[in-house]
Image 1 (tube, rainbow, N blue to C red):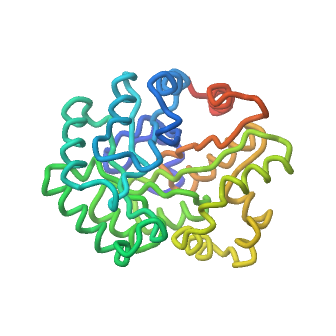
Image 2: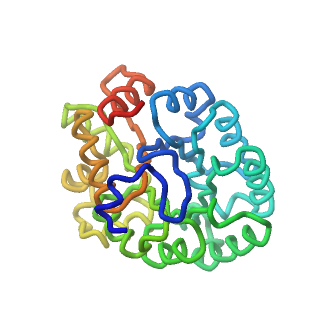
Length: 295
């Protein structure tokens, strides 16, 4: 299957992992509840990816699964440094037993800056975490990795169903697909601002990127994509901000999401940073769903 072929898929990866459709939503667990999940399901989004490092109990994903009938729920992502692997495996088995393949466990090594000395060898720690998950009965078909660089993308290809990169561009999606090949799922996250006031949107976008600009893994990823240290200084150049956070009308946002699909994504996980001033998240997601032609 070529990357062009993938633009007509239904959100089912080449491995058979069902993602529920081509468009999902990424949102912090603190900003998610069953009511919002039900709304997103009715609007036609196929999946919700729970951010903010869900704990080992996976209580938030379970709440969302229980509140919906067909929505796929993934974690984006469980942090291997803060969530005990045996507990995560037990919780995952519970969700799979109850909800089947509607649950996808996304795991990652988080940020070196936030993990202290433990993060000295994140790749090896991630590989060992996967070893334990699989030994504890978590099927690879229900596992994805937060993968930015080629080494972890290779691990995702070889050991899991695929990759769930965060804060990336369509060019990263294209390169990730080349590394993953056709046999793995790819679900990039995309920051979105439904605001046609360029100056205001860039200001909000910069605020949303402040913490990430301090993180080495993201900076290295952006530098690999051709951005410069100057692009990443002072809150980010206009070129950088516009590339990482798409802003504008629903049509402009939909065009960027389509670029990810054209580049080889199976699904794009939309993180709605903000809409027009005073607009609720539900209304913003509804406007975008209408533009995307969702149910």
